[in-house]
Image (cartoon, rainbow, N blue to C red; front, side):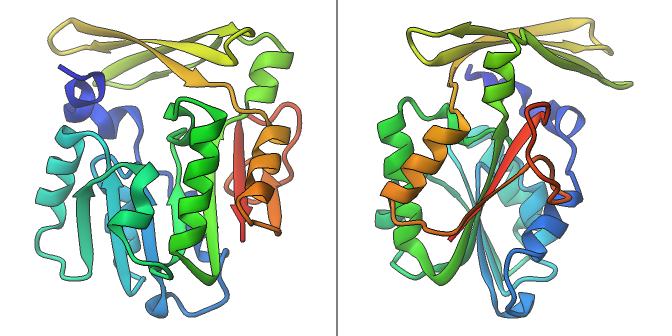
Amino acid sequence: MDFYQSISKYYQYIFPLNKMQLDFIGKSHQQAKDQLSVLDIGCAIGDLSLELVESYQKVTGIDLDKGMIDKAIIKGKSLKNLEFHLQNMLELDTAFGSNSFDIIACFGNTLVHLNSDEEVLQFFRTAKAVLKKDGKLLFQIINYDRIIDQKIDHLPTIENEVIKFERNYKYHSSLGKVDFETILSIKESNHSIQNCIALLALRKAKIEELLHKAGFSNISFFGNFKRENLTENSMPLIVEAS
């Protein structure tokens, strides 16, 4: 069973919705929310999309994991202006027409699941193609400059009454990737799910270079969803580009 499918039952306990994401998205566009269409990439079980649809004209959520999308579809089936699709983020231009979205949001370290800088550039170009003229691309990853430069080998453990989620990093400089090793412990059943996945260690300078190549000219970096400046100690790296 795919790792993300195996943890879908516990996803809301591992990664509960961060309401600051809603504020960040809301401040990204000057137009009234009820006139805007949003694409939520890597939507998982749909929690962010379900919040967005209360304010925005149209929300579309996509994910590559069927278990996640199936849960999202069930949760949003009664909402007419919300759609969920099993969809590859590299194929936006074939799945959607040009000028389809005012905002594309890709949070939760989704971007670095792509395999190479070339795939990231392909994503940026397809995102640009489906965005409207004044559209915004918003995304959040881990600040890999911090991980690499400070030789950080783990992230803080996530723990609550239901789960314990341990996260370790092993950087391979020759590959430009990190092994993301996780242990999810389910407290009720005393069961553990272990996984290791290679993630692209995408640095800020490379992100900026690829965004420019894809046609984005206005690029801002932030260190959190409060829109505070990105620093060498910021855990996330958040981008707004148009």
